[in-house]
Image (cartoon, rainbow over all chains, first blue to last red; front, side, top):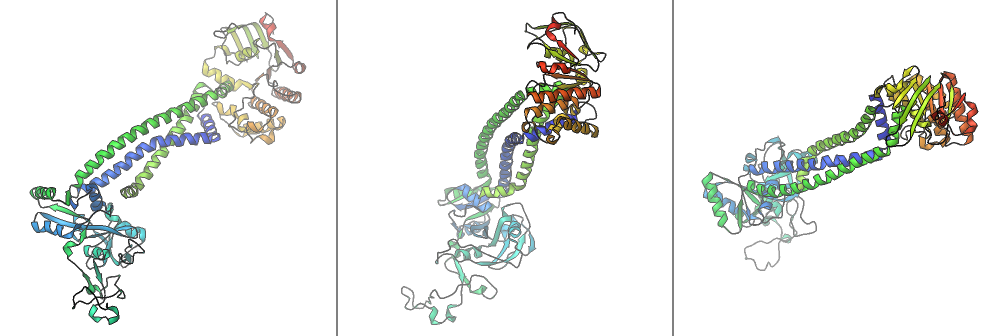
Amino acid sequence: MNLGGVLFLGRRYLGRNRVKTSLLVAAFTLVWLLPAGIALVVGKVESQLRARAEGTPLLLGQAGSPLELVFNGLYFTKPAIATLPYGETEAIVESGLGMVIPLYARYTAANHRIVGTTLDYFDFRHLTIREGRGLIDLGECVVGSEVAATNGIAPGDAVISTPETLFDLAGVYPLKMRVVGVLAASGTPDDGAIFVDLKTAWIIEGLGHGHEEAEKLGDGAKLVNPSGFGDDAVRLNASVVQYNEVTEENADDFHFHGEIADNPVSAAIVIPGDAKSQALLKGRYAKAGGLQLVSPEAEMDELFATVFSVQDLVLRLLGAIGFATLAIGALVFLLSNRLRREEFRHLRLLGADPGTLRALIAFEAGFVLVTSLVLAGLGLLVLQGIAPMLVRQLLG
Amino acid sequence: MIRCQQLRFAYAGDAFELRIEAFAVAAGEAVALVGPSGCGKTTLMNLISALLVPASGSVVVDGVEVSRFPLAARQQFRLGTIGLVPQSFELLDYLTIRENILLPFRLGAGAGVDGRSRARCEELADKAGIATHLERYPEQLSQGERQRAALCRGLVTAAPLILADEPTGNLDPENQDRIVSLLLEEARGIGATVVMITHDPVLLPRFDRVVDVLALRKGGRG
């Protein structure tokens, strides 16, 4: 057997029939890559979701879909879920049954979720500041590593919240927030979030605002004949410009109307003091109408039970399709070799021994198989690399 | 060069049987094999080239009994001793004409294609009038050009025995003459023995000897 001759003939045959070869390689690559890729992505999604869920004991939220609550509270997606009053979180703290970290994840800036929370959140998630400092004042924000990287943001820069509806004059005005710190990468959804104090999030919501003191304004800024108000009230008209940024100079002019306890949070992480407290809390919210206290881990178990049964079905289907593709590929080889029978006969006539011919066929089939396996492997490596991004996109 | 004695061969499940008492070709001789279709011309040629193994009798080529060769030795014998020119060109469509001509060097266990073989390829292509087609593929050539390329491949190894199975069968008279002229001239040039099957009486005077295979089978000697 002349190995050089086999390689030469095989290479030339595959090169001359590159369309057929490419199609076979592409089909075989998909046969290997699709099931492995799906398993890899699902595995990544599962490990990411589970790691976060396992690190979060309980999540309090408004009654509704527990899964949406988990996604909002843990991954900052599903911003439109019903909110619960902040006072509910204070009630748990006052009961002494556990610690509560409120979250308000509704608005965005530069396509990243703004998460209003308290300083406890950073300790709870073991988040450290890579650059700059943590939150101290109203109107400040700390950005995740990915936000900083993709937007080229560093401490000293500013981000502006995105208005929900651009043409709604009565809607929420954008707030310019000073970036005071960048978090170290954690490989979690925190990397893609912008963290602000809960009160800053409420300012974005329009529940708090800042403007010049009414007493210092001229009559032009006041409403004439304000009906329906008390005589001692000063009412201002639309000419009063509201501050769209909290600065050292105007920070004292920011204030909230109404009760803080009534302000919304989208979810609250509840860390029970002990097992008994956990049982008491679960019992309390099982009975309480309008609110729900869920275990993210249990929700993930339920979610992945469904996901895995679907994945199992998909993999079975892909297995069947893969088998059919391989069978068709084998048929293509057999038919192709049948068509080449004369060629092989002539090669034998010229002096090629049967081993050389077998090696030639094996080389051509092996090339398609090995190339498709290598391409599938490379595809898996690429998938592995972009899996975190895919996971984030899948999570919405 | 070739000596066949008491040769007997039959295809499995076929009534045809080739029996040849004696057939010999001297070294450097050019012999034309003639006879009606199905009389056993190609079978005899395949026995000489050790593609077929006789049921009995012997085929001796260049002093070696090839009919007793094991398989691997037969392949090696064909590569080293025989230059083959088939009727239907048998050029590989995925190789260029140059690659097709040099193919025997790639199939052997020897040194492969080197400068000498390349030079020989170009010399033959030049003589066959296909020097400008060396980088083309068989489908881009006419029938006559393809047969000339096949002939070049049969001659490129300068084998001492050239077996040509109706190489002019599909060609017009001009190309027939060109092919036979090139074949015989080159064979004479290297002192090779030629055995060629043909149906064309016009070509027979060009050979040293004409052997009727049908007559051989009837007990004649050739």
